[in-house]
Image 1 (spheres, rainbow, N blue to C red):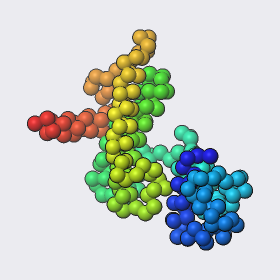
Image 2 (cartoon, one colour; image 1 turned 90 degrees about the vertical axis):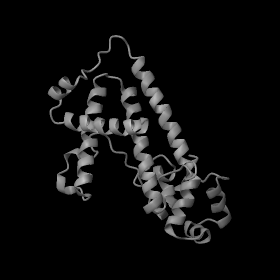
Image 3 (cartoon, one colour; image 1 turned 60 degrees about the horizontal axis):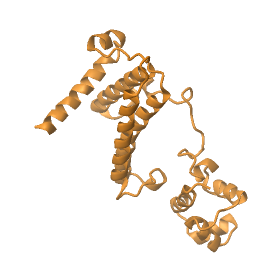
Length: 224
């Protein structure tokens, strides 16, 4: 049984807005037993897990902490929606949001195109985890300000999540640097000169160079 099970069980009940007594009654168990489940003091059987999934309208994978998606469906590369194919008018955040969306999507697309040329899945996955960390942090701040029941998405407590996320990001960056350094000698690196990127990726290079320029300006400001 996942360590997240008891936490998710409590949060789903709170999200549903019912007391422990009422939830226990509707789930067909005693309040004392539900309390044990919610505290992690006892592990439920399969019959309870099925009833709880129906009661809270979630999948067993979600309830057991195996998936962040309530229906438990984990999409693959073929079924995931590709935001890079969206038309401009589908983003309701104004011109600035559209600009930065394009800069980031195009730059990340180019990054994974280049990383893929190494043929090293671990390298690609580590880079994805590093970028995912930044997305996690930004969404955590957004949910802390505007969201409800953020605990179902973010297991780290509010007072520690920035520290934990920073440590995770530092470890991922160190791992990425090590993976690149230790690549086999026969692995050919992609061409990264500005001229080559401009020729090879005529639809993406402008976004990358602008993003790098913005970052350089910020770093120069910090350095001064």
